[in-house]
Image (tube, rainbow, N blue to C red; front, side, top):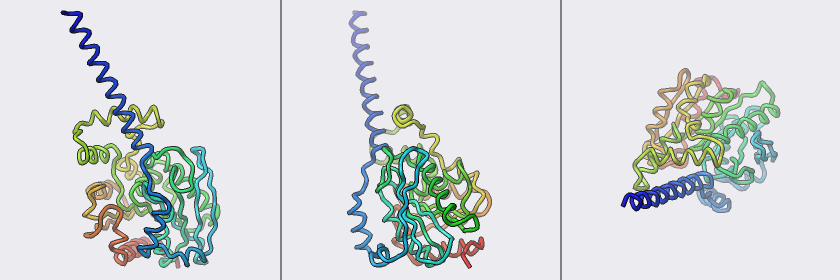
Length: 309
């Protein structure tokens, strides 16, 4: 009888171990290799919505650059120069998107006196990189892009960074953990902590309700992609940013909750603004409130005397 119980216990233990391994592998695969939007779909969507002006894009002075990432792959960037200025804004797109989604912001900053740099995050668009890390490795890529912009524009240039969703988290992680080198940052619908964000989505979309599932996934993530979820925490990074930050979110966002931006705003010391839009789903604040969005950015830059003269 005792031998039978031990045998059954051993089988159940093996099944549970195998199940945990399968779960950890599947969840980390979903994160590392998150399904991206097709490049042609993004282009057609932006053209149809009249956010991407083909005539302007084809005629504007621009330079395509391959920038070496310290992570060991090339990053594709486009320097857009409609204006005779050395002032630039680097624009970081969200997960599953690409640099074409950033061009609408380039037009906004053109009207405010800035040229722009749009680029593809790792594993997106034309850039290299095998996995998506939601800001961990992406922040190093952003650092390389900013360095290239500084070398091109000169140390006297005003450099800003605008990020949307994962791009906003990447912006905060860059400024708060690597270098607070830009003159200003705009964080549109950033998550405040990757673990908390995953926990929220897991509770919302699956029957799982325990942090232990994420702890298991974290073990697999460290083994498979070399980092822990704990390292992807804008709430920790934002406390180290001294330059002005404009936080933007839509109150109707149910993917990354606006409470996360409110938290980041409260934690940020020194110069900061926050704008919460009444209309718009996730990453739709500009698309649904274009004029007010641009006015908000202009007022933020004017307040801190960052508008080019």
